[in-house]
Image 1: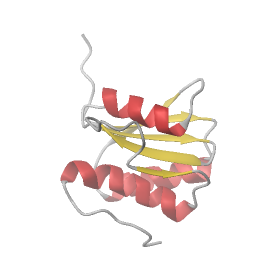
Image 2 (image 1 turned 30 degrees about the horizontal axis):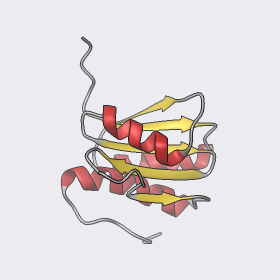
Image 3 (image 1 turned 90 degrees about the vertical axis):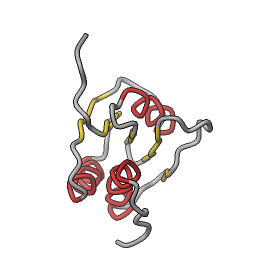
Length: 113
């Protein structure tokens, strides 16, 4: 059995590269590690839920084109905790930061950019 590192997983499908950089920057600002894993297909909400399920930290983000979703392991609802259909760079950074803040049990950043 291969042990996974304690990282936030970011599943992507044809990601907008600028948004991906912003998600990663938001996570880095919170001092948490992440891993980007390309997926062949899927929608942001479903992929974020899948990412949270395999993340040791239980936090998963998905970026499909310009659509972003954040999901936390153990949520009973399949809807994402946060999601944006056409995310702005500021929203992407907030999703990244909040994916880390939820595991650190800190208040969310919303609309600070």
